[in-house]
Length: 246
Ligand code: NDP
Image 1 (cartoon, rainbow, N blue to C red):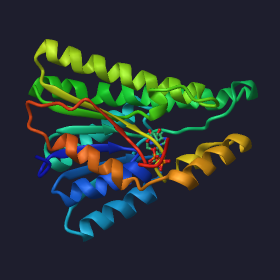
Image 2 (image 1 turned 135 degrees about the horizontal axis):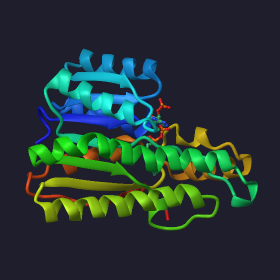
Image 3 (image 1 turned 90 degrees about the vertical axis):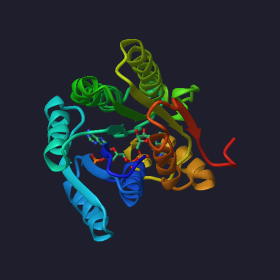
């Protein structure tokens, strides 16, 4: 059941996070929005409340543990607990390795990997204590298959896959009943491409998205589906993309 669940969403200021926040709030969830751009979060929270939903937000940089702890605290204070965290914040400044865009490499590791670790560290004690909880993460089809120009991005998304599977196994072994779901989107029309600074890569990725890209609402529906399953059931993995994308 989605109704009345308290759901933290990272990367909620645009794209997949925004679409998911709106869909879940529309289904009766109490959503807690985090990202760096507070003005965007405020607009989205206002839209949700105007539509009769419940939303709060907080500035969140997932690379900072204190920010992740802060959003969990906000969920508790605003709504009395936490049921689900959707670890969705990410960026994709792809480029050929030979371009040596090492700042971009480190930023992807910090946000796409350490951001996930920080988010899990912030909620895990609560989920273990209450013997329930749901961790959902956005990986990518690049976490399943190698793509040229995507060595580091793909690596971060492979990490998410492995990490989430071990979280699932250990939760089962320890009897904490934490559900997990990892989502592997293909081309989804969002602001993600604006993070690519390498011009050649940006052009070729843009061509792919112009040809195939679909709405982030498609991923929101999958997140809602995962949450809506009975509490004794975990659906671990979803690969979701445009029907015409090879
Ligand atoms: P967007 O660029 O629209 O959204 C990315 C979100 O991440 C934004 O809300 C951004 O907010 C947030 N973010 C970035 N850095 C940080 C940070 N340091 N701390 C907190 N939040 C941060 O793209 P998408 O919606 O597409 O991306 C969402 C996820 O989906 C990402 O993990 C991405 O890798 C994944 N994905 C997307 C695909 C696609 O085709 N679009 C395909 C496969 C996976 P802000 O800038 O305000 O902090």
